[in-house]
Length: 109
Image (cartoon, rainbow, N blue to C red; front, side):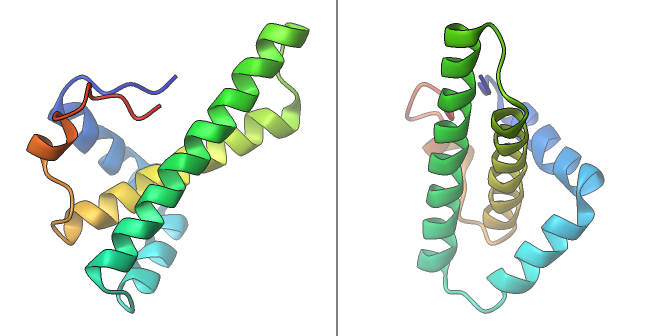
């Protein structure tokens, strides 16, 4: 599971996604240029929810069958990257603050 423990780790994830998948980040930046802050926040929330769902499916398959299917692994990795990219874009639009993130326990899923 993906769990954040400090804001520096969040910055590392955001920077990492830009290096690992620059095309995805560029595509999301272009899309976000046409969106208002509420829409960007909604896309971020959806991406986080989808990442959590994919992680739960992967965990279930690992627990049930001893290993996850290739589809579950790929889905989980893709949705994690998508959530990281939307997080980066949301931070660039100043929609994500460390104080807000740590109001909760700091976990994404």
